[in-house]
Length: 494
Ligand code: FRU
Image (cartoon, rainbow, N blue to C red; front, side):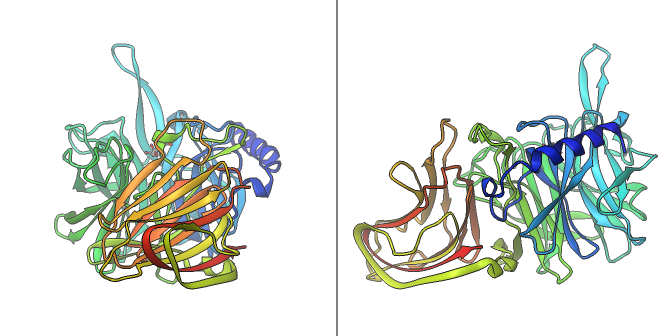
């Protein structure tokens, strides 16, 4: 093991131990200590779920990318393992950037990641260059391949940039080959997704340009993932520099899901529909795995590059992952629901049916908390007369609250964390045009101490947001302008 990795492992162990369990979310993944960004290597290995993450153990800001590592049997209770990779080689000294993992036939676990190096140009200036590297291990310790890097700028199509070639997502196909998709920047300065093939995971060849941005959806497409789902092909990617369109793509560094068919002759995606993956404030760099039972499960960095200033200064960890979500395709759209394992954490059911609220704010006995699973159905009292506005307040006390606000006449749902205790004037609101019937809005709200994830109409749309309000603010209230009737089912998540 390199000195650098040994140092990181010692440091995280002594520091990470000191963070109290109640200072972390109950079931969302946070870095052992320090900074976390993208999920990496989300995969099954020897019957357990592994997740690696972009990691700087030494402080709560992005720097010197290592790979942190956690493992779980149920996707909700995670154990920390020692850091898996450090930027300790000549070819990856600037950082071990994002990538993925897979179990090899011989029982070893293969990690594939972007190795970042720096080159000096003729005019004396420096620029980063990105190649792909691999490491193999036993689920805890990894050895970098002595012939790294395994893909370099020589494997790029004409005109593509050496500086933006990153985030390999590997999978095994029925034809026995490994494939991976990698984000790249073509000559037009936008993004493209490249497809590569390998017999063994170590020697790779270029197959095709699977999809091209052509300056339509943001610029560089980061963190691609590509898979077949419910008879369609799905490309997930996280574009930088997105320009908002209607209520989609408002987060700058946004999320994009393209659904279509695969042209198996040309290995290109025949695109059919486009959407944001998440309509809230905090979601980026989604990655999926195929579970042994056939479920496609997605996890994301539940954070926004543009709102990093929304933070708890005293905390020794920064950023968290989203809840793992089961994804499916219905009517050309990506649906997401919390993994069903979450049901086993449900306790203390409290249920209210047909509560009529008229031009007033109410609270309901025993409906409160910051680690809860809340199911709501909101309908007008009188079918022919829509209410003007429904509001759910949570993480609430005299000083603070966060809000979900629905206006059925416009079919717009808004999340607003302006009063969540932020000292910074970063973006705290997002809106989503809800598809479907305004006469019945179904929400499932998952709160886990420092976040809210809202699943709309059985997961057709999702809004995720970090909520850093002090934990004493645990009130939940309901307000209606007009008259509405609501069903509420609440569980504590324990
Ligand atoms: C996305 C990203 C990746 C890169 C990593 C570096 O959030 O920019 O493209 O590999 O973060 O930490």
